[in-house]
Length: 589
Ligand code: 0X9
Ligand code: ZN
Image (tube, rainbow, N blue to C red; front, top):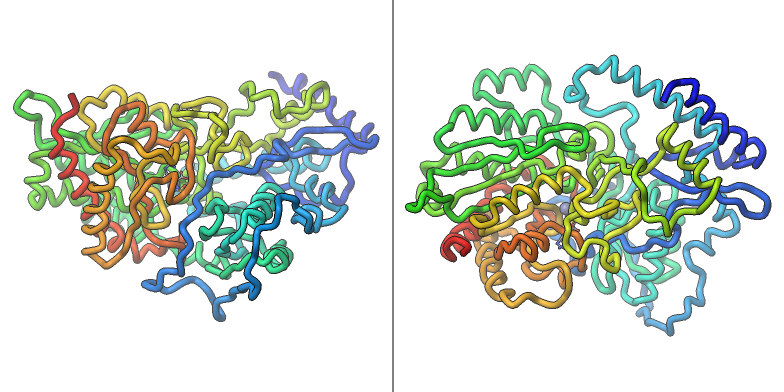
């Protein structure tokens, strides 16, 4: 569309804004990104209503209640703050008679909700226009995006605290769900609130006091896990000067160190290095392109076909499906390093197995966590232009105007949770998956809407005959999980637990780190559209596991780089057990 027509289209909402006195100046002061809303009229005024006001399920992890692991130092300063109610909470009847979070926030509530909405406003337009110019200039200055460590505009978590809380009653769970729905920008649930299980929640400095007071009022115990997220982010990953990278290239042929978390470019460089140095056993294949056009690379490691000239029982491993779970990428590249560069130590294993390894399953998201928002989870797609589920949209002219302004100036919510996007009970009852594009567990507009999940599923479907194990690496909470769809266990549940328990033992033997094993639906929460369930139920891969790596919340997603090697060594021990036991089952028939 030409600039003139764009201008005309821009004038339409501008006019409506003037006529409708759309928003008060107070509301316009802060217009955070990543939020979509719809223009609605109420009491003769126009307001921006956030999409899906009542969405509550987010399906993030709720870990079993336990005291914090004491094997590591935690990121708290000036002592650890906690609060414990001295009264034993009891569940009353279902009536929520006391004040909920939203009513507590008083009559300003509607206005405050408005501030996080970005349907359209004159000031919002100006802000977006300035942002676009900045983006354009930024693009001209930084020719190679891979060289940017972190942008000036990157999300800042200064003063944000990570709290671990435990809801003891159903009523308390409801309070938390309400809080999760009402404050998606300031209160981020890293783990889903589940009764009697610990829930990790990131609270912004802005609402910290109010939220803590709310917990105290409601008798919800909490302990502070991290006192300043920004500090933890800054110190997690030592910077690597350009010269050091160049030295590494010239001395070893790649930049990987396993002493820091590496960028996508370094990881891909390592795959290419392996393919050129070990051509007899390594093949790198691109199985597609990400939304932003990055290659989706897998590495095949095989010492040769079986007696029938077919692939041997194959172990698939993917990592980095959730962008912020950096440890999964680091561990998986370490596994590759051992299998290939130390292959003489694993000849027996390589005699009976083949491997297909995808170290970065969500490259756009992974890069985004390095440059823009360390805590990003999803892909980076934008499905705004596509038709959506109409039930949640305000109808008519105003909605159209809102859509136009979103299209013109951005401001929509990007990304889909790849682990809710697989075609397995996708969209059924919205269990543990969200239909809200702004939610961290957004399932996407349709199953396999993401090029990343589509590429993985196409490859696995083509090669499923030989794939005996599907392993997907995530973090955190130290668990080996199967079966996340329902609490009903599959017929071969005991076989899976037998393998998982042996792997758990092998892991513990290395550094004494304890993993829990079981069904994801029981230990965490049921979900739809997850890759492990898809691999088992649709692709028919018997040994399908999600491995949630270190730790149990001391650092969570911000696991220090110094823990990469110990985590990788113990995980590799566990993975070898799963591989050997899978191979012993023979090839699929
Ligand atoms: O929620 C997830 O996708 C996984 N946890 S994470 O914290 N890494 O996001 C757990 C998935 C477990 N598997 C199923 N529920 N099917
Ligand atoms: Zn994950």
